[in-house]
Image 1 (cartoon, rainbow, N blue to C red):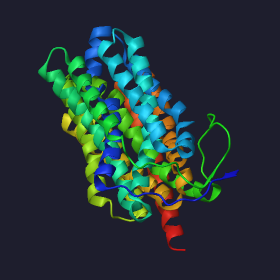
Image 2 (cartoon, rainbow, N blue to C red):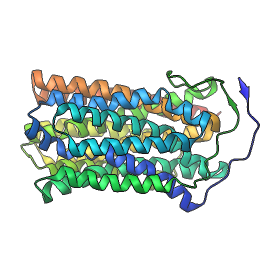
Image 3 (spheres, rainbow, N blue to C red):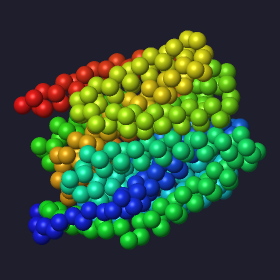
Length: 404
């Protein structure tokens, strides 16, 4: 291991924190802007629900592959040198969405979005915590988490409104996204993001499964135990929510699909703002409970075909992801050293996004074979049970260690 001389981390101003957080928001807004437009593209290109989940999986694939290298690269070369190219990748993706003329173009665009998201959830969110300084870790970990879920909610709202307002919504939606990303790119200029200090391995950071030092692995596992089921629940709403509304509820409104996705992430934002001061074990307990209740609401939606229950499921899923994510990020901010923080963020996210991708894609193809109700009911039942067991284990382990 090569030893690098220690230097104090420069804390940023409030305005600099906002600029760093906006990059996370802008990229996540792009990542979820296509949600209400899938119905439009499905009509234009004639693809199935199974193909829709493959488009979503391309996003997960790009994200997962990026997480194998982005965190270590940011810890080695500095946050800015990784985040700025990531914003550039997002801009290319937005331009591809504007010009997409088939499923293949959508897959490439979603793959590139995944790359950009993989960069901001590891390097971008670590940059927000770094700029806050050591004395504001709890506050800045919450700011980073809120920036992510706020952007994730802003995107589908833009898409839904544009779909209702114009017969050609794609150009409008992604032109707005391009503006948001350009603002983020300009905002990163001048941020005091030095290379992290401490110990770094020599050589190029070749792709590998992200990991953290052995003493911190228990923190990572506890965060993933609640964050992963919550993220899977929101991924289900994002990828199959429009199809669920059409096939099970009988409602074809993209505004409702986009609005449900928007309120889902607004619930994630609101739950963090309202409950963010709670200790981590309570965040985990409430997050796991929200995810379980979200799956109960999905089952109720399938039984009653009620749009109200679908929106309730989205609200609960958003709260489950938001609280689990906040608890995991707080453990990383409090316990993982600065020079390993971006890789720890990458590890947390890959442990959540991979099961979300696998379960969502499997459900999409199960819908094509057995129908929406049995496939969605199976996912909801399995995810509810797993979320309950893992949430109880994470909350109990956190409480036990806190009492020592």
